[in-house]
Image (cartoon, rainbow, N blue to C red; front, side, top):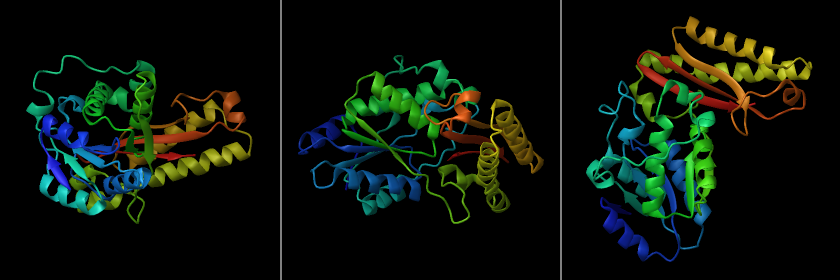
Length: 291
């Protein structure tokens, strides 16, 4: 695997490739979930000759003023070794000055109906930062395939819509969420948890599983409507908060666009997803479960 730090060197390297690459953008501090995306990208390109490219860049634009940009773990040497073992061909690890040589005045602003809900409601500007850096990385890498994790469910949808509306010739693939044996979704921020918090953190996926069971029971009894959804959401958030969590949201939405389903859609079996974000101590965790 080659580790490249400049745009010019990366473009020169990719110009020699027999086919356009598959791309996995990350912020580093890698775990098995990231490596599964690399392996998925490798399977997708097969024997086409397309290199698998990963990027590591902690993107200032997607961090709020009180978030953990300065303390976000930078573990480049370890990450490079893991990527090489997972089958990555090229690691692009630019400095901030290389990727943003000037203040990034031009930004990609996603539509409010998707970007200002759920995560966007609690992290203003987050998806503008994500879309801007991903679009810029797409312009640099010029991939034909890009792979993102489904743990960031809303992010995956925002980026898919961006690619479609901008007519980018990139196939976006979602990788399934990898979990620890107790069910906790793998996340770089899990490293912030104390031992006691790590034991408690499994309650987030347990809450989502409870919501899934309650939605299924209401649907089986033909009693699933918006009012029932609201009661399930409220009860789930309260249960977390009673355990000492600080919950931003537990919401059941349509899989296809993250909007609230109508009563008629619920009666007709509309595919749903439950998304949750809650803070345990100083660590904010997110997860989702398709229902």
